Length: 173
Image 1 (cartoon, one colour):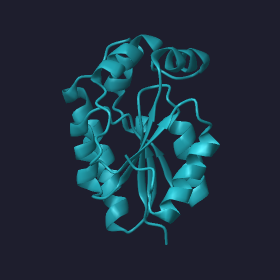
Image 2 (cartoon, one colour; image 1 turned 180 degrees about the vertical axis):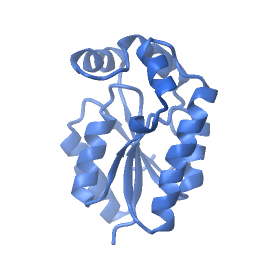
Image 3 (cartoon, one colour; image 1 turned 45 degrees about the vertical axis):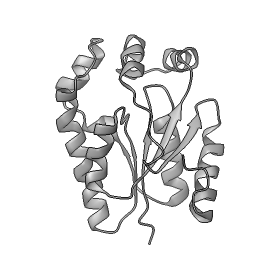
Image 4 (cartoon, helix red, strand yellow; image 1 turned 90 degrees about the vertical axis):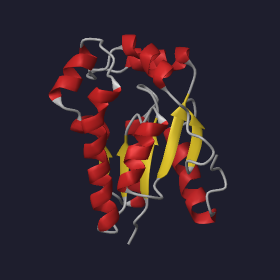
């Protein structure tokens, strides 16, 4: 049984959902799109171009941590997509599943903006990219994280994560 737990993280437009879904499929694990657990109030705020505060995110992060806790307690693996912008947010997620691994997707503003502008059907407006980048605290070397540039193909990111999982995660930062 595969009990690995991953959080694919980064700002909006970085490819969390794409990489997360492909990683979950490759590992034969459930995939949880973290955005689906946002309360309606949060979605409405973001859709209106209003950045979320720490207080806005608290309940959402606790709900995600509970899902991670359930998977961890059942010794079931899971892949979660979540912005996890601050260390404090990642600490909440870790409280649910100690030892989880983060896959951090990062890139330049112009590339992220182009990706956000090209997608359809998402409530997150391009106008919130700056606030997300301002809030972002990249993971530290002690946070069990693999780092990938958003220009890398999702398939290549997944292949590296799989290879590192077997070899002992040599690309952890």
